[in-house]
Length: 114
Length: 115
Image (tube, rainbow over the protein chains, first blue to last red):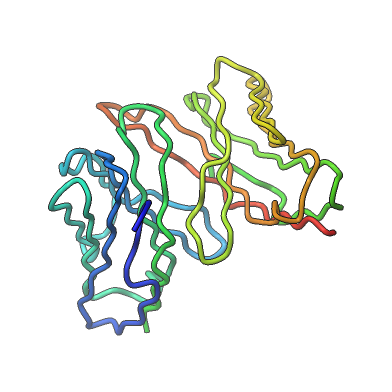
C-alpha cells in the first residue's frame, strides 16, 4: 500500500450505532488530519494530530472522537450520530503541520447516517 | 462565513484552449495558497501553490496568479486536456498559532475539458 488509505470506503449506520473510521499513511509523515465534506460545502478541518498529539479541534461535537495511536494511524470513532453528519470524511497527512508542507489525502469514507 | 470562495461551480472548455479557474478570499491573514485537484472516488491531490510574497508560480501547464490587493487568485491551465477534467479546490493557509497551519478550502469548481 502506498500513500494514504482509508477504510471503509462506504459506511451506512443508524443513529444509535457505534462505528470507527480508519486511516493509515505510508509516507512517514508526522501530522495527520480529519476533514469533513458535506454536500454543497467546502472541506472543513475537524482535527489535527502532530506526533500523535491532538493540536487542533475545530469545535467538533463530542460524538466524533479521534484517536491517534501512532504517527501512521488515525481513527475517528463515531457514536450517536445525526443524519446531518452524513458526509465524505477525508483523512490527510503531511510531514509537519508547522510548515506549509503539502497535505496528502486519502480517498475518503462516504458516511450515511439513517 | 466563507473565507475562500469559488464562485463558479462549473467550467467547460475545449481541449487545447486555456482553462481559468478563479478564487477569492476574505481573510488578509492568509499567506499561502494552494490548488488541489480531485477525481471522483479519489481524495484531493496537490497541484500547485503560491506564497503571498509572490504573484505568480508556474509548473508546466499550470500557472497560479495571486493578486493580494484584490484578494484574488486564479489557476490557468494551458493547453487544457481531457484528463484535466476534475473538481479543482482552492485552499488558503495561515499560521493558526502554535505549530499549526490550517487549510481553508473553497467549495470547488468542476472543470470539464471537451475533446
